[in-house]
Image 1 (cartoon, one colour):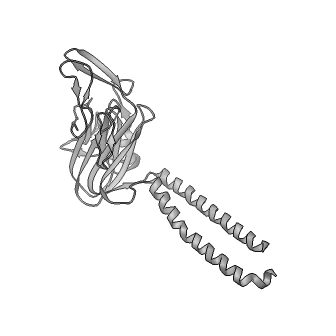
Image 2: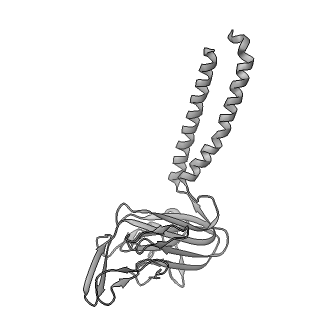
Image 3: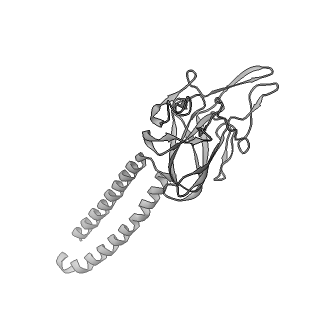
Length: 264
């Protein structure tokens, strides 16, 4: 009975299996979008947000630009605002240090702009205020209570290549930024601080010194024509795991189909 029905049953199985396997690329595409948003797609901006585990944690984003371009880094975590994606960022995060490095990984070197490290922090002399578009924040009372804790770092005429944004708490900066070159120029040189880092921000006004403690949230835009995000190595590991899951699912479908044919 089975042998007599094999041709028609086999044809039906193959057609169904082919259709299901053709669906797999859609699974893969969806997985890529979920694991690495913006990776591999050229645009004019990258909008990034998240939270740090502690005040000594660091966020890094590697990206490429295709030609000589101006790179602008704008934060929103402290005062909030509307980012390049049109998302409204709530205020209340920490004031940050942002720094631009050339290359990726531990060998990345600090970019120099006008002879100074390409960096911004409201605790350092290298501060480029970013309000607006970020919002101002009131800390305390009296004259000087309203402050800007977000940065707008503009780095002109950067050659085509790979770069890394480094974002950390304002009180925890790369040594390549401070003290900076020539003693320190690499990301692997580590980080320094004035004291125990925390998400606390203090402001001295005419009425005294006032402090607030922000959340660990950050938000930052990287703006440059043709910018492309480079996914972290861990993203590829997650993708490999996802692909293995897809393959296992396909094997299950194949097994069930074969079992169904045998029972017939």
